[in-house]
Structures are given as structure tokens and as C-alpha cells.
Image 1: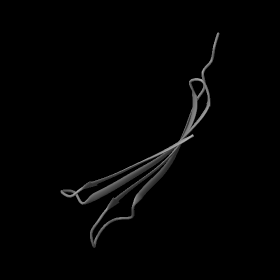
Image 2 (image 1 turned 45 degrees about the horizontal axis):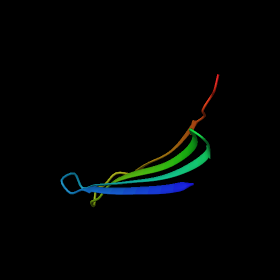
Image 3 (image 1 turned 45 degrees about the vertical axis):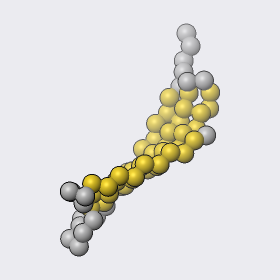
Length: 63
């Protein structure tokens, strides 16, 4: 089980972006990822932040 986080800021566009990823290894070459992503523009007239949750599953198949 792993948790990774990444935060970035772009001062030219006044953009703040964060990603948090949870990775569960449930077998060899088989993973479950849960990713939370948020993007914000800082400033007085900033729009609503963009948010998303992504789920990805990989499974090794032997044949």
C-alpha cells in the first residue's frame, strides 16, 4: 500500500494543482489506484475549483 502526493504552483497563471494517489498492490502486476486531483486558480475572481476522483484497476492474466 502506497500514498503519493504532488503539489505544484504556477505563478504566471496563478494556478495551484494537487494530486494524491493511493496505490494498493493486491498481487503480482495487479494494482488498484485511487487518485484525487484538484486544480485551483488563486485570485479574487477565481472560478470554482476543478476536482476529480479517478479509479484504475489492473489485473495480470496468465494464459
